[in-house]
Length: 138
Image (cartoon, rainbow, N blue to C red; front, side, top):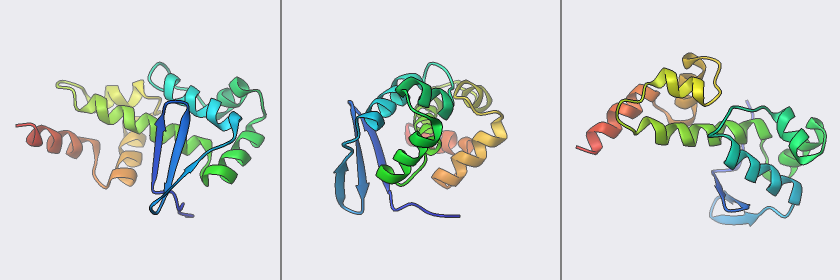
């Protein structure tokens, strides 16, 4: 499995800051900026796929994927998943939120898929995250 040199993605305002080691790089591709803004705004409302993102920005899925790979070093699907995960983590911090309902509402096909991605990204399961967050806030 290929690992990316990207250590942090920050989807803020209309620009993406990509931090590789200690340097920040602005993404100067207007199509990527538009796609990232759409991801940030849409991911909390409804799940969507790379094909829909490509349609939104007006280019082919292949072209969009190539641009993301070239400029960010990762495919758009990974950016979508990471943003979903970021929102999911915020939701899991809310009292009474169920892992399964968060998983489905964030567009994961199953709670197992969500848990696997969450653990691969964070090193702990969503349930462990909820428990650790609740002990930190006490």
